[in-house]
Length: 315
Image (cartoon, rainbow, N blue to C red; front, top):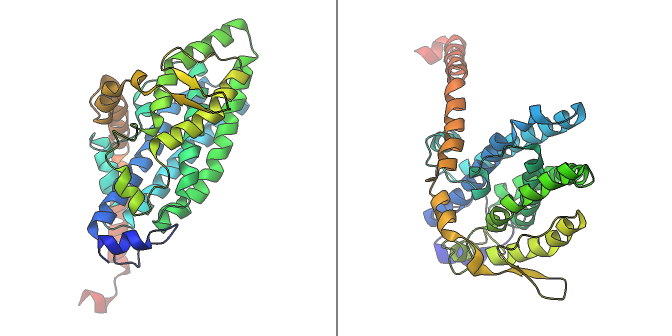
């Protein structure tokens, strides 16, 4: 198929590895899915230290399961990207450790207190659910199938995050203040979760034409605001003054776009901020620490293959 044929056929779960797709489609889909997979992995790295900080055994168990889920989502998505034939899973993981792999802006920032946990586990995961639900209808079938599992588990993550937020919001005055402080700091980052506004987006038009995406960044952002501004207020959180959120008076909201700091966003998107370097460094150090395991498994696999070789094969 040429790219025009792809655009004409594009629809939910329309294409699979059996289709002879043009390189332009395969590269665009690989970029999109690799970004998603990287974000799942880096989100897990951001949250992992809070397993120990969780205030009870039940919280530790639940949070440990959440982090494990996120790592699993990343691996599932790398396989979906790998099926496009552009990059291997190992190549994508190496790019992430070397600072070449891109991931969501929210996961470049450090987290320091337990009060920040629901900023990711409720608001960011809630924003992710808005996007991921639409990806069940993406045109690359392996990606859509992966989203079936990812969305099912992310639904539990959001409920878990909401439960943590409810506990803090109904706790002591100090806990409520800590929650509001965390919300003030994270709110602009959460609003930028969906990426640049439509007029600044460089990939949407093509992705929409070939069926990889079904909603624009602004449409997703507004749908999130409509659902989550009332939820934030329900738990006593005050929406920060900036970026300004316009109440349309009909139950819908939108952000005042000129209030969004896109200079900072694009600096982070290039992995070129102190927070980026810190987070990527954690990934690189972890990968180096377990390299001996990979090498041992590779040696064992080669030795096993040699031992199982038949005399005929050897000849």
